[in-house]
Length: 609
Ligand code: F6R
Image 1 (tube, protein in one colour):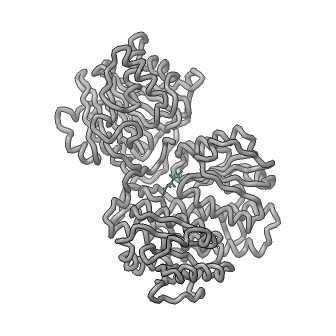
Image 2: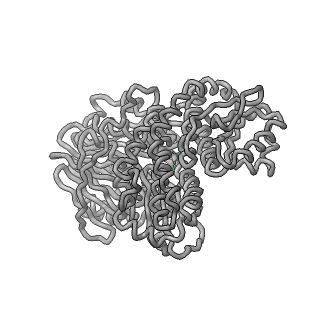
Image 3: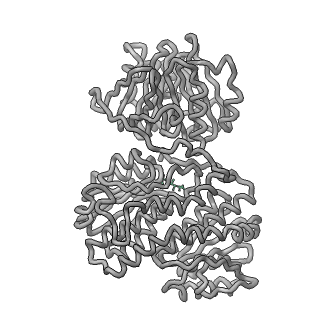
């Protein structure tokens, strides 16, 4: 989703801004732009398309300036046009970039129009530029103007404003959309994601909700939501500098699929041993919370929601604790009942998903005993705003389609099962079996990745298909859902997932030879039931692709193609069976020639609702 980079320095910052935008490309965008102040003039360049188009348009005249802001836009208000790309300008003096949505933009627009401001775009962002221009007329500084403007904006924003009459200063404001200040030596920076600034600094200040900050080359002044000046901690980042490197793989997604055995080793390291799970792996005080937990509520979006759904099967079956799972955008807008001693768990790769953050905020006001974030980005809003946290340690995930974040979340949930089960009379034998399964997990994933060539060949058969159905039962049902999500988001083939017991309640009507049916079939207690569902499909002329344990005894024939997945212990089977489904969607997308890492219309981090 939209990305922001800004700098105040003594040197020309254009390359820093463009490199920052390149590093944010993975988040998804459709246009970009940059504004630089040089010799009291404001030079703005905007382009539709990739950052490459923008950098090609930069030259010796418009590409010079020691103060500048830049943006990648993912359209919300107004189509994908150069005029709607940021930065937006007011009075040829103020330039503004903005992530988020100003919900009252229509009212602001009509007020500002009546005051004589002409609008050059259809965006909500342009109202920020003109509001600040108007308020600056009766204030002493840009900071004062922004502080007065902020209460007039309803909605979510992370915004940065520069004024060509004061090139030494950037003013930034955060409400619902993250911003991080990067501290340099004699120069300072701002970005919506620390990834953008890693080539220039590793020292960061994460702004909090409601913060407004004035940033010069040598100073940072933060005014908190209560109007008082505030001090914020400086955090030294340990994010890998070269996370943006494909390491020889054709796509980030493929690299990230292959990284899974290694990152899961990382997720487990120092946290589990053959003797059990270490104390307080889920944060200081987590053991005391788990000892009291009677119910778990999980909230997340997209792929993270699927990991929550899988966890529900595990938490109830293995740890004996009741659990329900809900999509964040639903939870945040309904009235719900909180059961006594409920633990709230949010799951997010980015830790910045607007709906999940809003759901957490609402839940904290509704009487949950404690909140735990399972997250991949340390220092993210979700982690900072939760009482407990567990970092998945998947490393930077660049491909828009989530892969390693999902499987590390699942590994984290198996650890949670052990941590909660300990307080819940979980049989020792079951604990031992999960510990052994976790120890075997990385090598099982390595083995499963050797199926890549077989799956690559199979993908050919999907290239002319428009629809597909994914089936699973029990804890493999959410895996089927995740498989369907992966296929639709990167190959644009319509894919639906069903718990296979539901087939005869409607979806069987869809079955014909043009609708491939993908089945996940480990050798578990539901196998015979699943086999009956497979026969129902076969009897109606369906063509199936079955990912099965060898001992499940499926045989390939003219209606069924069987891929044997390495045998594994039952508790880790959902993680193992995720791999072939990721590979399948990757290879189908390759054949279809889509933009695998940045699929159309999608963004990596969904910071607007
Ligand atoms: C799908 C995908 C999305 C995200 C969702 C939540 O591949 O990546 O469905 O899972 O947008 O994002 P996070 O996990 O960052 O909260």
